[in-house]
Image 1: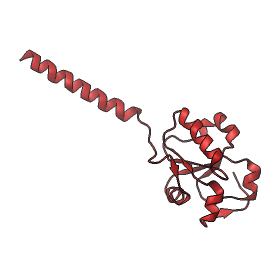
Image 2 (image 1 turned 180 degrees about the vertical axis):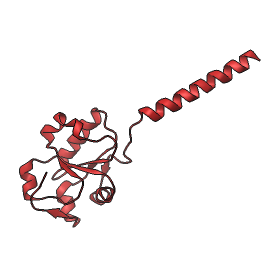
Image 3 (image 1 turned 30 degrees about the vertical axis):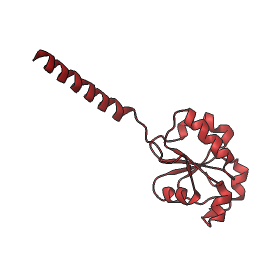
Image 4 (image 1 turned 45 degrees about the vertical axis):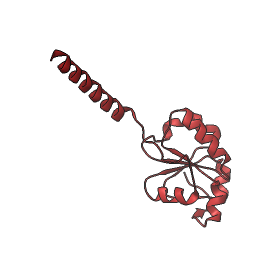
Length: 138
């Protein structure tokens, strides 16, 4: 009888501990690491954030016309990690998709989990007829 009670108590403790640690330590995780411009645009209609990793002068020519956009050039990304929210979906974008993939890899090694790389960047965005604007305001 004592062994049965001890076993039940041990199981209950393990169960409760695992439930508590999982719920407090898990960060939101994106469904897909690489997404299309159409998927990105849909996520941006909700609460996602687009981080454009291009240089500011590139944004002066043409930028993404969405409400939740932030420019953090790839070279400055490591210095600005505190500007990247961990509680919302972050979409990384650039001109063609190469720098945003590099940014994705950097953030992933820093422990970010709710991130996606937008394939094709601004080139694919424009080709899909999604909204752009000339110039960029911070």
